[in-house]
Image (cartoon, rainbow, N blue to C red; front, side, top):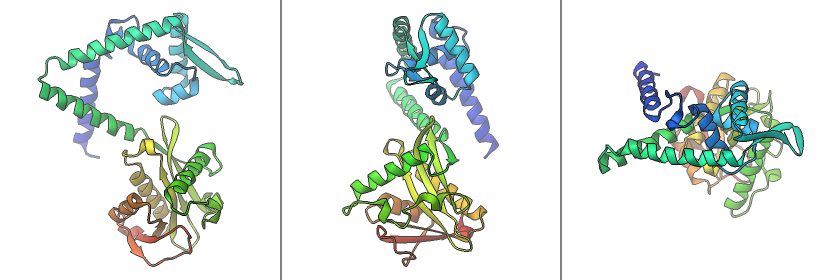
Length: 299
């Protein structure tokens, strides 16, 4: 990572903080600072109630700070915090009627503030600025995705595997039955025989990839999948690269994978990532292409 890139990010952060009013004690001329205003807006996004843990993960806040924000809003009569009716260990939060009114005022002020930012610019410059903002938002969203190794039985991992199978069942003319695949048992993706990575965006699982690590043999990538709503963020390429790196660290000299002819985007990704098509190395019934890459060729 280049020093100039780090400095540019810092300059951008300072300029953005100044222009959107984060430095002001009362955000957008309202009665509360930015943290409370941002939380208020988040809670009114779909009416609630919201699981407090989900809110914390969505905003990337530690539990102590979020609790202080909630206490402040609750003290002003803007939110109600209470146990979930089905599980008292889970706290939920919703806006009160007063909270919804303040949230509406916040929306009005936000619109006015955005209009004021754009007003001094020519139409061409406005289009340039909003286009650049959309691109920055896209890249920042991609940078917030976390990759975590999980047991295949973990709820997030199981969700990804189910979603993967359901999508392939629709895509393949012959359907897809995980039990008929060579990887019928995800135990092959459990340490020490392998690993399973799950990509999470704001705490929600949005992708996965597995790696088989048989002793003294090639590593094999399996179950690479990205949720449709998260596609375009580069997650498939990132998952692939992370699995390759972990295979190399494990000592594998070669990484292999196979894919179905219907998965044209996946086939293109593998070719662009340096994989070479090779003769079949397994009897996977859902495979039409087999690929291989030496770990020594990985950048």
